[in-house]
Length: 217
Image (cartoon, rainbow, N blue to C red; front, side):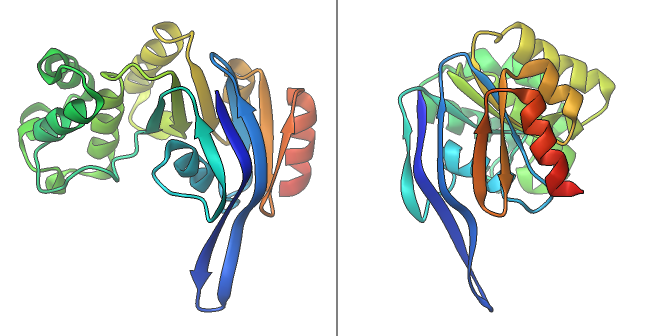
C-alpha cells in the first residue's frame, strides 16, 4: 500500500512561498492502476516525485509498504560523470539486483549502442529517458510511476514499453500522469484530479474527467 497523509509541498519564490500541493490524501492498493489528471503546471510531476521519494513533502507524509519505482523515463538521478553501464551497476547495487543479468536487456531495450559505455553527460534527453526506462525494468517494483512516458521515443519504442509494463507486469500497481484521456481510461480503474493544489480522488473515471474538463475550460 501507499498512503498519502495530509501531504503538502511548497516552494520558495521571490514573491514568497508558493503552495503546490495542499493536504493531499490518497491510498494506492497493490495491483491498482490510478491516473492523476491536471492542467500544465498543476503539480502532477511534483506529486509523482513525492510518491517516489525523490522529493520530500513540506508537511504530512508518504507511507510506503510496497516498493515504488522512480518516475519512468526520469533520468535526473543518474550520475552524469558515469557511463550508462556504470549507472546500471550502481542502481542495481542499491536495489540488490544482479547488474550483469540486466546488461543484455538494457542494451537491447534502450538501443544506445556504443553510448551505453559513454558518460551520461553526453546523452540527449531522449537517450536519458530510454536508459532510465530500461534500467527501471530490471528492478521488479511493486508499483510503477509513469509520468508521460509514452511521449518518449517513436511508436516502436512505445510498443516495447507497452509489452514490458502492461503485459509482463500487469499485476503491479501503477500511478499514471498523462494528458491522454484514452490512455488513462484504458489502463486505470480510478483517477484523481489535481487543481489549485487540491487533490480530489474519484472512483468513477467519467466523473473525474468531467471535473478535469472544467478545470481546463
